[in-house]
Amino acid sequence: MDEQRLTDEDISFFNNEPHDFLLSSEDFISLNRDKFEYLRNTLDNKHIVVIYAWRRASYKLYSIWQETVKHGGTESFFAYYHDHLARPGQSQMLSADLKVAMFCHVFGKENVKVLDYDASQRSRSLIPDFMNVIGQPYQDDMIQSDKNPDAVNRSMDIADIEVIRALNHVFKANFGVTGSWVRNQYIKHLPALVVAGLDDLKAIVRSAERELRVGNYFVDSRCEKVMLSRFSDNLVNYQPNNELASIKVVSDEWAFSLPAQQLIGKIAHVLRLADE
Image 1 (cartoon, rainbow, N blue to C red):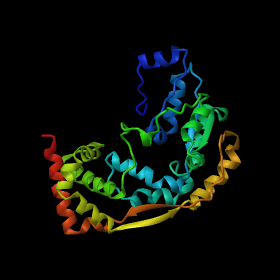
Image 2: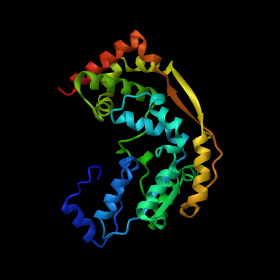
Image 3: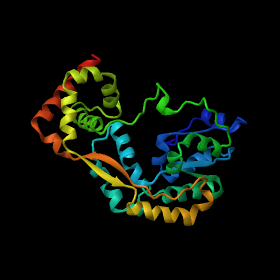
Image 4: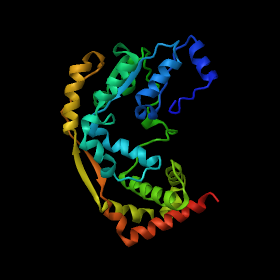
């Protein structure tokens, strides 16, 4: 969809089938308006309803950045968010109202449902709430991601993320490797990496760790007001949010120590040889 190249077979399958379809992807949130207009115009025989999970901006800062690192990103947490936090009212990533307004323009305001992710998380009812929005019954035997042994995209420790970020840079700069290859190899060969000194490296990373309090950023209060004033009819389970939380981030100085650089080199060597 990003390249606007659905095949005639794809289009015919969706348009001609009398069934409902649920399309879900992490990548949807990063697509611009023209991509969704392409979807609307291409699947013109379908009534499209958008379900947007609204998570307060400062709560999701670490989660979004972590995903970029898992997929090959090399920027630090602070570098990644500088432009977004400097101009929060212009960032669709942080200001949910901008993304919701775009969906309303493309698909019609009556076809956009906003799920309050933070409210669902507090009540541990995210999947039941989602099933309610799509009009399907929730069953107690539905597998939750934290209980699914086959889940492949679990949250990772900040030290692991920092090591993967450093390895992303090593493999991109020296071998042209990009994407999620490093993260996949890291998980696959974890015992061998521990033997190579991974635990010692993670201890160095944690020495540069700091804690941030989130939940009361300007972008949070601004977005809350706009969402309520413009999209109250679209909110399906809204609850006011006044809670603060903590996230852990790491400053870059850990990577300048000689022991850390030597350990990164050893671990990168293990990953290079692991699948040969």
